[in-house]
Amino acid sequence: MEATEKPTGAAVTEGLKLCQLGQEVSVPAGARIVNQGEDPEFFYVIQSGRVRVFRETVDRIQTNLTELNAGAYFGEVALVTGQPRSASVEALEDATLIKVSKEEFDRLLDQNPQLARHIIQQLASWLVAGDQRLETEVVHQVKLRQLSWFDYVLMLGLSLVLSLVVNIYNDNRIPLIHGWGDKNLIPEIALNQAEEMYQKKQAIFVDARKSAFFSQQHIKDATNLPVILFDLMYPMFQFMVEQEGKDKTLVVYGGTFSRRMDIDLARMLKHKGVKNVVVLKDYAAWPKVFPLQEKKAGAPGSLPLGFAGFLEWLPLSIFLFMLIPRIRRSPYLSVFCRVLLAAIFISFALSKIMRPAVFALNVVDYNLTPAWGVNLWSLALPWGELVVGLFLLLGIRTRAAATLIAAMNVIFIVGLVNAILHNMPINCGCVGEVGEPVNWWKVMKNTGMLIMCIQIFLYDRFMVLDRGGFILRDRKI
Image (cartoon, rainbow, N blue to C red; front, top):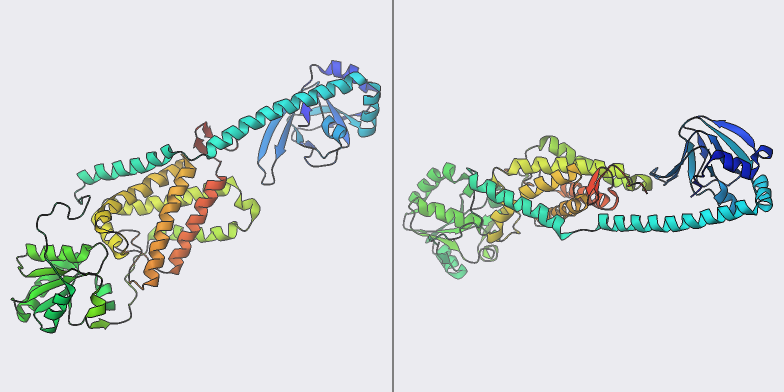
């Protein structure tokens, strides 16, 4: 620290005999008197006015140390130690100073042992006070940066409670576990039995998947009856079955990990009065046994994501910002990342919350979620996006919120890469029924969001509600 307050200007002036030393200078309000890091040349005594002493980091974050009034002096520490200035001094109002050169200051100390002792005592008190402030700030920063289980329980618990309550009163509600407690079990058929029936033409094979998957690869001579288009396509399907023969068994297959499509279709057919319906037991093995019809998958239908889709391109710019150290560490960049991520995730959440059944079918498309987890995931995830997005936007528990957003992005990136590597003809499902095609650009967008979460985790400290209260920037030391 470069300065401290003294009792009175008169006492200082008399003790230092400044009438014989230095020169009087006038400083306007806002003028910088001393710059942090510069070589020391002068010692200053304030005759009138008020100044502030502060430190400043490379990214322009200022920490106020003290304010000095008439009678105080500053600049003696650097002259005594010979080190560069440890702080800057700026006039808060028009001030009059006595400016003493280093040579005059050294001569004054030699001739005035009382002043030398006073400076040594003041330096010692600064060291003690500095240690105490450092300890206080370290404790605060540790507590601020600690991630508490309470933060995650708060956000995840709130998301789960909201999803369950809203689902109860939602006209489009879905069961927590699809098919749980259903007594109308669908009989299964082993793969070798199904192959034998196929060879003898004793069965009609029905593919329950979406049309894009069916077009890409299906059992030869099988027919497609997607679950999502059942009511529309069933009359034509019924006519085809009557032409083929009512006595034939309908073997439903789908191949999804959750068994969602094939079991749902078999239940719908049973509800329509079809008796001979079975599902293929070895749901993923049929491409290795049956003759196939294949063709290159075409681009699935897509729907522009609107304003949220435009915002999704902005995270790509984060790669450029992260190359510049000063911007990379900026708390203002954290605010930009928080607002952008909040807008994206809140927009996507609102499009899915009221239609969980539609979102569940998009979850099934990725072929990564077991049957018991599809509905739970489809209910909880949109509410999680909304809650965490609001926490980020409002500056509440931002580090914990950023880690949850990052976890969502990691899961989505894994799903995207898996879909790309397996050439799945699907859309992202960001807005319900459809969305943007799954491609590497989509992976890059979510990687940009992941980097934004890391930036928030490391540098967010502007307009944040932490355990010590609401702070607009750095807490004053």
